[in-house]
Length: 249
Image (tube, rainbow, N blue to C red; front, side, top):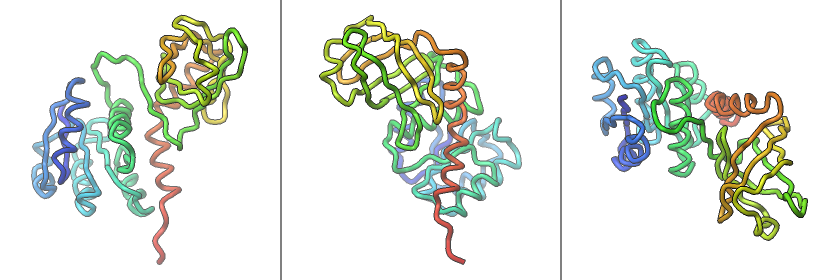
């Protein structure tokens, strides 16, 4: 699989290579967007990451030319942008961008978003079988559970979540200090957007984060979580369109 990086910063290419080379991507780097535009017919990338912070004027003709030849399912086009104005986000949607990644996110979050966007449109043949997500403040995901012995209600934040489990950071670590590996949590509630899903889980570790393996979901709960992961790129584009300030006419 060919991943094309268009950016001034070569360290962005190195960062992407570090995270995505192990799952089968060959990284091709360009610091000159004009060369990409001139050679887009020959390049035929599976995934193109365009840093619009570096080149705010060149991503539109690049995307337009790419879409004349390859669909969103054939070539995934991802824009790295910082607070894009409404008009730019609207143009990205109209021209056929697969998604926009916020340049303000941490490097780990950026790479997670990039992999998620690619997975939505193309399959990835790697050893990790399940979608993973690093929640941000914009994500409507919460988890609470009852301590299996004291029955204390434990609240916290999700550091990472997948279909199979989660990394959980309790607000009050003293409530969970005695949890042990293989402890069963029969009373967990996972909030996905506006819905609450009953989940049973098992403790896999108790350190800085608590590792949880999901053992069962209430009827339909597993599918709701999967759909939330699958639709993330669409939500981010809609959020960008809603939140970007319109320029005064």
